[in-house]
Length: 484
Image 1 (cartoon, one colour):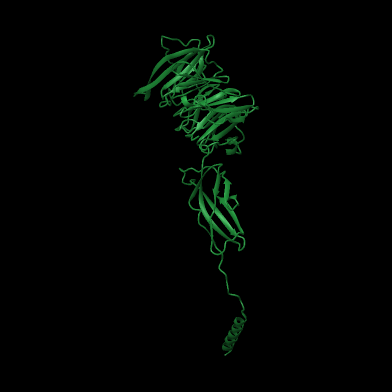
Image 2 (image 1 turned 120 degrees about the horizontal axis):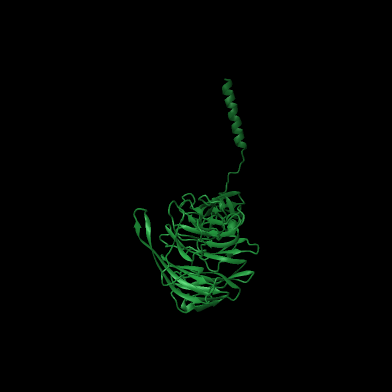
């Protein structure tokens, strides 16, 4: 009986509570936001600006009290309604399944309701370094500086200190810079050579310019305990480093090992050459002491420790001649130039290096040399001249001071090309098609880069506005297929 009375009392209380509920149930629908335009993957070059304009659709009236937040991998890049952000992320690698893109997100906040709406997408960052002109310069304190200019877009600015930007915790490059070398497409080598400092031979990643490996005295293999003062490098299938201490073999395919200098009583020129398809087996250089061209081979192991002279034909002699400069044509023809300072005369040679047969015992190619003198010229070039050789056109471009002439590699008359309006020429480079000659001149304070046409219709004409920068540019190099 008590239970029945208790239940009745509870029902009366509930009924009373419900009768007093005066709540408002006239709810309004939320003004939802939908973004319709952002989808898929956006591609941008590192250091370029990513621009995305969203298009919003509202379920009710349009709201102006909105906040925007654009982010990539959790890092906010913009808080504007239209994303307009310079992308500093490192380039992606399409071959790496874990690094093909970055995850990105747009967060829109309706400040009236406090509700947030999200739209996800992807961003692929391409390298800015793959199609570019590189400049290695020296400051007044001897410090090396690496700069570059993109060549996939018109009128790109010069960007300086790119090594420091890519490697913020590693300090600066070395001092007394000598060479920036971008190597062959096959080797994908990118090397900066300096004579002094803790980064004498810095091998960089071509995609992001991060330091892959640093070479100094301590990493030279073969029981070496001397100094290491590199001047330049050349890499194809194998490689060779020209240094004050001599010639050092470099094998990027074998853990990028650097081997001790070739042992012997030699005074090798700062030059090496090879058959471009067989360079892992043989290189050639010139010994200024014996005044002979020498062949450098691997006798055992991996070091180039077998040195022998290339016999000089009986109809001429190289006595009294020191190495001056080297060119190359085709894949198997070296075109060195020697100089007799007493005669003030340059001697042009051609050395054909072929290996059509193999020694089946040693499994080494059997080399044959065709060695001839092309011409001799006086009062044309000397030890102070700056030269570059066109491998396809077979033209020598020779600069003395600020004046440049062109001479065919097989002879003929020298033809004036261009006179640099400011400074004296320090280095030159032909573009891949050998249509433009990039002339670098230095006036004691600034360097200037002139792009000069060398085809008949553009002969001696400037192809673009000159570039200029502080410091002395000592070396230039290129990557990729230029569009501009």
